[in-house]
Image (cartoon, rainbow, N blue to C red; front, side):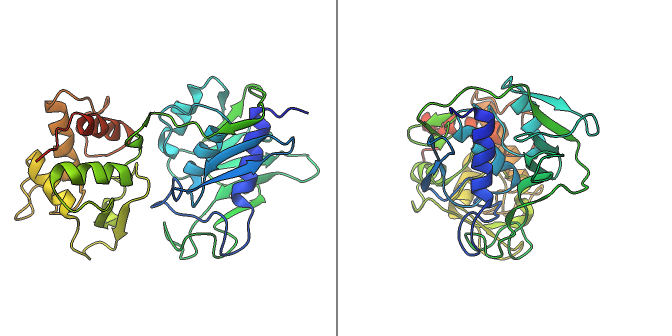
Length: 319
């Protein structure tokens, strides 16, 4: 029997959270879009889907699983914009808690903190079960690759949580045929998925700014992560106040006009701080590139990353 997108999505989520300790998919906000590898998942009807390998956090797991079954997720990138962006697909409606029980494939959402997927609804033989990514083995936002505890990603009975509501499927979606590859929204042949700042962004900027080309933004303080959050791999996060930061970031700060010696208006030398991000955004805007409806707000999300991609393609960072 042919499989629908709704059922395929639920099966992909089950795959992501089912594993042995020390292997499979662990929890990481710092490497939340995978490790650069791919893996093929065979679904119950023999259909295969291809998805990024490696770790996830709660929202990137849901987003990449949807994309793996051929669903264009628009700008969805974290819990704060999942509702608005996934409603654009036309596949979901928003339902308040307490209206009706979730069914397999429906998405529970707290827009500030967490998301999980119903893989077995209330009253079913298996009971009301959720698939989710929870926390690293260290109890922090990142840890060793893979699930070290068997609980970083998991299936557990429904639990009381301050859910804002549910993204409920309107129907079962399209029928899949044969094989599907993860949808690469906003994909550029040189930069990859331009919503997320990763190694390809770093290498391109390093070449144009004249710094060492290694694809890594080194020594970034974790306190800046809430502002520089739409990232893939290639960001080396470290304890706030430790490390020397990034030569590439220092070159970028100089390029866009940040005053970094001494620290000025919240701009930390070699750090992608809110001040650095805001000045960078204004520089992009001054060059005729939109950073989205919020403009220069000091938050580096998908809209800003798309703007950076445009600037890279125009070689605006060239020394």
